[in-house]
Amino acid sequence: MKKTILFCAVLLLSFAPSKLIKTKVADGITVSLPSTLAPMTPDDIAQRYPSVRAPLGAFTNLDRDADFSVNISATQWLETDVELAAKFFKSGIYNLYDRVDIISEGIQTVNKKKFIFYEFESRVNGNKMKENERAPIYRYAFVQYYISKGRTLVFTFSCPKDRKPEWQETTRAMMKTIKISK
Image 1 (cartoon, rainbow, N blue to C red):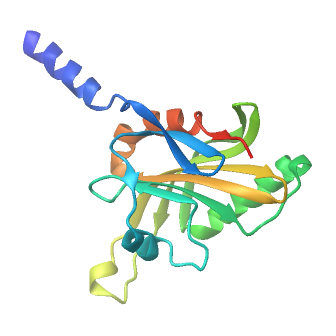
Image 2: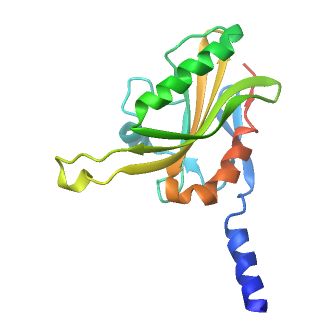
């Protein structure tokens, strides 16, 4: 009986959120991240964000399968259009994947700022024409949008779906620590 209780305690602690450390992402933007996330190398950024616009900040874990990033969206919304923008962002998420299962969504206030958020699991179907790419890819993600002064900041966490139990609580906590001073 004692072994069972000890095993359960160890199992629960293994999924406990990591201690969060306040991290400067860019001028005027901070977020508390677990110590297991470190800034991506320029090579990681080039490979994962093949765009002319690099993210403001990008972090990954040692396994390079759990990522947190902050980007500026190309879309420009007015701060008064949060509800309308939320519908467009949701549609955009559905267009990125073959299947999306929304876990939670809404508008929440974090440090006196309104954020649109989507927490979901996704599936991208494999490519049947390529032998090594046939299996579908399943992911867990939490995306949060902040609209301000002609820009939209996008905060994204993503990891493999099977690692969701170890990251979900930590991710939710991280997203509630975002501070924007500009």
